[in-house]
Image (cartoon, rainbow over all chains, first blue to last red; front, side, top):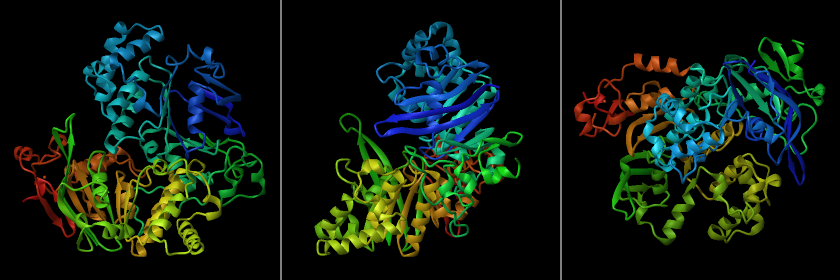
Length: 320
Length: 315
């Protein structure tokens, strides 16, 4: 078990009160698993990933425990997290394209970064070059400034930097969303390659684009308004989802081969609730076509089949 | 309705404008009444440039754009205003379209002052409400708010509502749903389709083939400013001929097939034929010839309503 999270709850502190962005998230990630995290904007997927690497204000740790390879991560303590960051757990941030220092040559920046983690650049350099080859970049990029690279190249460069110290867990936040379809595919396949070559043990791939997850992820976890809705193998989520939200979400996705004249897709009526003062119980209740009285209580996130977790009173009941 | 004839756009680049960059090269196509045409290409393909030229936000270097048989570049003052009454654009980033100091609904009052000064305020309010309802929003919830109080989807639908308030016949929709969430995306697409049935024509600019496939009757595939394949959407997708289109198809993340399977399928389906060409460097087609490096291929009709610019189609 690579990553294990228990009841993780993170709020944002605002003048108006706490924004309950992540509520009682409990799940685990197996060794070698690429888990996709899907959901609409504001569902808490980035909060989940940010809290694991750098929990800072206005984010507020409420409760929960995180274990990585059997060791507890002190995520609420910024200082104590330092030995884990980059070495055990690393991130490709959402803003990866702008993540590099524009005033320094890339090689120089990598050197500084490694020094700050107590590593020797000279010793690691050959490995850096190997990795660059893996992502089809020439070693010359180390002598270039970030502005000399295209968006896709920058993204790949950041992938190399992020994984240089072979972290156990890699958090990849919307790494493909700003890219063209052809570079999207290349980047996604390289991520899978990193896992296959055991450079990283497991990956949490956060994106709103479910079709990318279908191509790369082993499992998909769907989140809604700060709560976990469903987690199962990719095939199950796409072909046989159980949570009403997942069902509606999957059926609203246009894919090649679907035309409006033949098959008009429907969206999900309504909007996600505001998390400042979210409704009690299941937060999807108001938009859910099968909601009933019981939904006023928070549904537990339980395993209904092996590897298939679900938080729904209606769908989960039959298997309880 | 709208006819584009052989348009080219050259940008000056370099420190002193000494270099030329051809963003759009000799592009021609037309859009009929009540038709949605997708303009598909990667970043840098010139798709947004074409949209901006239609909206006259930038000039054309050569070639003509005709709207109802009138040359758009010659329109002046009142004629131009009349043109904007019928031709409108909605762009990718709804957040940067609004002035954050003013309330979001200011876009409606500006329109009122500028285009419909003779309509009394009460009647105008009714029109705004109707337009907002037709894009699926409740006026009571969204009016009188600042841009930061509304979501991206709401702001984007505001802009579409604004375009509807005018007597819009032609809409340039430049990546309008790439910033929206999956669940609201489909609503905006369906909205466009409903408006089409009321006679609106749309140039739907996108990099996402599945969206283009979903909504449009015809598609134009653009690579480095040139049209490489044009025709009925279904034909292009079922039978992509140009090596570039084929490469795009193999990269689209799909929900029904994995990438590996698509590649296998495309290799099995041999392209009909391809030539000298914008796609030369990245082309791995077996039909690639030495002359492809020198000679740019013309659009050839491979089947009715489906044309391709590739040497593979010549013979």
